[in-house]
Image (cartoon, rainbow, N blue to C red):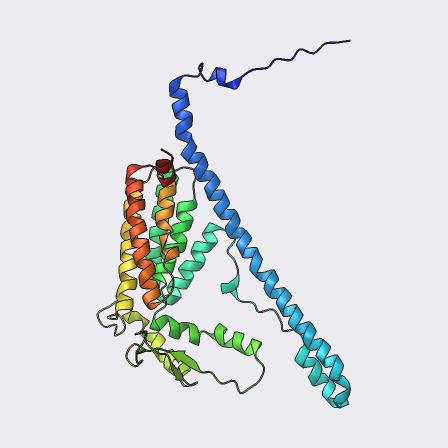
Length: 327
C-alpha cells in the first residue's frame, strides 16, 4: 500500500516573493488582454448577427409558398385543364437571386477590395485610392504600435467607407439605373407591364411641411428612370463648386463629417499605443451612431460630437474610460 502526500499552498503567499516590477508588468498587460477579449466578442457577435437574417427570410418565404400551394390545391378543380400549367407557374418557387452586393465578405482583404470597387463606381478610381491609402495607413500603424490587433483597421475600413459613400442625388440615380436593380424587381414581380413610381423630395422642387419643416416627397412616374440615367453621369461634379446639390446644408454636413474623420485618423496614427488602442477603436467607430436623415441625423451628430470630445481626452491620456471609472 502506498501513501500519497498532499500539500496545500496559498497563492497569496507567493505574491510577496514576486518582485514589484514583475507585478507591474503583469498589470500593464491587463488592458491588452481586455482589448483582445473585447475584439473577439465584437467579431463573434458580428458573425452571429449575419446568421440571423437569412433563416428568417427563408422560413417566411417557405411559409408564403406553402400557403399559395394550399390555396391552389383547394381551388384547382374550378379551372380548366389547359390552365393547369399556368397555375403551377404561379406557385413555383422563385429562383434564388445571385446578387454579389448581398454576400458577406469572408476576410478583411475581401471587404476592402469590395468597397474599393464600390467607391470606384460611386465616384472614381482616384476616390477609391484615397480610401485604400487611409485604410492601409491605419493598418500599418496598428501593426507597428499595437501588434496582434486588428479591430482598429476593421473599424476604419467600415466607417470611412460609410462616410465616403454618402447617398446623395447622384448616387440615388446610379443605384436606380443599375441593371441589377431592374433585374431584381422583374424577378420579384410578375408581368410585362411593370410601372415604376418614385417618391422623392428634390431640394430645388420639394415644398416643406408647415408643421415639421421637413421637405415633402413628390411622386414621379417611370420617366424618372431616364432622368436618373442622365443625372448619374454628372457625378463628376460631386464635391466641386459646380455641384448644384453641394450647397445644401445636408451635403455640406456630409463633407464636413468626412473631413473631420480623416483628421481624426491622422491623429490616431500619430498617437496610437497599445494602451489607448481600444479607445482608438471606439473613436473610429463613432460614425456608426450617425444615422437617419434631416433633423434626426443632426441630433445624432450633436450627441456623437460630445462623445468624441470625451473619448479624445481618454485617448490622449492613454487610459480607457472604464479604467478611469474603476479608479
